[in-house]
Length: 221
Image (cartoon, rainbow, N blue to C red; front, side, top):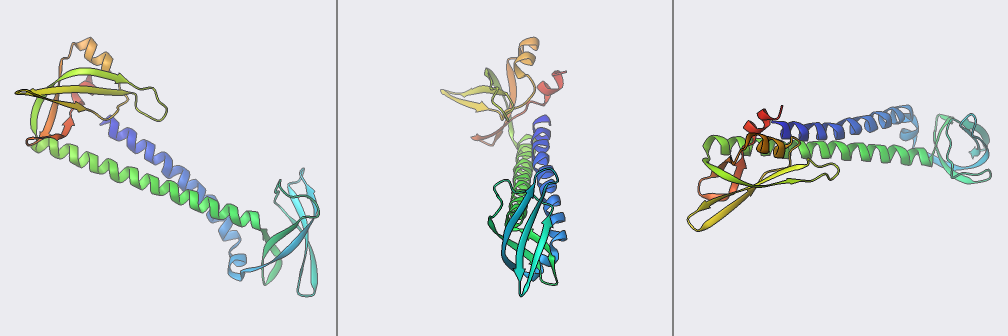
């Protein structure tokens, strides 16, 4: 149904951003693999910063040899004369990254992993909801609940339409609210003069229910 599709699309957005971040960080990690393996670091002095070419020249000493190295990176927080930590390939001291680059790689990996985790959580929750709703529709007791109110919520990142309905058994009235959906329930209900909506109940447990909006969705053309 549409609401499941919307949840899946929303989760896929997180997946795409997560894969992009992991992709960029993986490229940087691959290029810096020898530096990571060496685990060698030292202090360097910023000799010059060229904003036009996006390069930073640093000077550092490893053993008895001093190196002047042009790095294709800009850190706007740096000024000439700053002492910074750099990491280098032990077998090739000119292969260098600054500490900020290492931090960016860690941040990108962390954010990418977080986005993919969010994708998985939304996916699992959506699949469970689909399974629960399908089970209620197949095995639950069907009732025709009276449509009481339609709520329109224009909040960002939320489906705007909710339907509230009720069903009376004896002297007790049970109320039901559907998950927010994108299609305009209000227009469909008003145009077709619909008074009730099917609700599937888990036996006599009115707290476990599923409001079936499939027929209303089909009318929203």
